[in-house]
Image 1 (cartoon, rainbow, N blue to C red):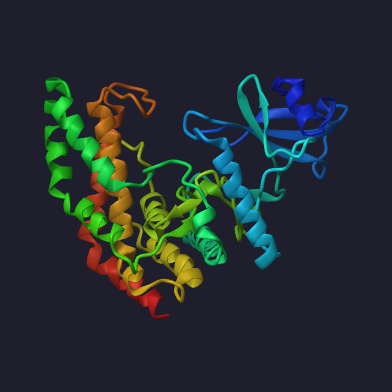
Image 2: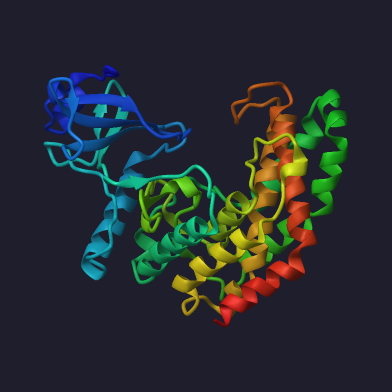
Length: 366
């Protein structure tokens, strides 16, 4: 029986009997380290017994855990008051009523485990894309009237494309000649699409393009689906929940749901736009937000996919030029191929824009 040894003080902080639980690594997240605490009797797990999700917060990414905890607390309180039936997976308090415990300068939090659900790493059916997109849209809709000014920015400039473009330009100037020459064609390709970054500047100053509370990491595995029906249950991993633009969530869904392969794929012939998945996620998102969005937001829905794909691509390229200081790599050209993957996806989106915009218009007027 697998049992990862965790400090007894962590269990004690949350009032748990260490001897009643087995801890094992859980999920495929790269930021926080996550464990499933599962109760057992003798050598038998209890399927309907107590279970929790325990996470060690990555304080190199989330440098202010109090800000993350505050946003969780604000969202949970607002939803409990205004949408009491909504399942919001919020951290459980320690025995001394804190939102996390600190042990050996590490920050730990405990969340309830939601049984009979799954978090998929990728959508394998359009219906799954629909359910996930609808859950992200519902979260933003339910938090529409929440006090936006009270939510804190947990990662400054997280989706600031202006900054990311500036970082790329600096990386081009300072890169070793060998790396710059290796990536020359790809650099020129991304620079040719600089209008995407320019348009982001226009959005930032457009008063009718409001900030909303958005998730900022709207991937498939941040939604729980019913393990049998695959109907949406709730959104999870709210660390990046903060004020932002809808193009962050919708763009990340388009970037990660529509192609059958991830950003790790090196066979670029496998990258394609799955129209049914695009149709499903747009419908799911707009089924929740159609009546809430401003005209300028509605005009940005296709741009959202370009925005996130372009930004992620230039972040990979910047890291390659900077000698791979941010994203972990498994081989020397890893970040280069990630960037090229995203460039191919960007080109695919651009080449299909008339068709994709027609799908968006269909669902805007449904």
